[in-house]
Image (cartoon, rainbow, N blue to C red):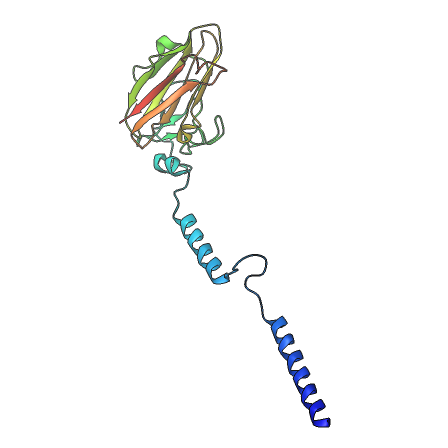
Length: 221
């Protein structure tokens, strides 16, 4: 009888040990799926690789960046194409601020780094190389012009109706280029044309003016 009780006790202890071991074993299917941490690590590595090789949104701006933007240069022999506080052009064709800093076309309009619009001008007295634009009555005239890539470029804007107009470019690489004029006013701005050839759309930013036809393009070759 004692032998039988001893056997039963041994069996009970064995069952308790097996049950305890089963509770300690991790269940990979808990919470409804295979956790597979190794697979997760591989996916994270792949995602990081895609992010590292993706093309930044600013690639267009970088491609159009004028050499030496932000650098201070010698203003000796630098000249202004137009009067009225507009930017200077150095002998090596860099448009610079009055402090001698190479201007940035992608800066905030009218900031210290940006090419600046002039004061009021007499359109008829502007030099021949200035590209003269009229805006009003739902159009730019002319609504397209051609410039050389990277070359100093001066455009003037004259309002020919009873509204105010603001010329701006759609490309972020030309976000600094803007001129505001009222009725019968003329102003101008000098800047380096983009380095990347192509068509650069400009428009009037006054409400509804672009939708009504006040758009155009600068062709860079």
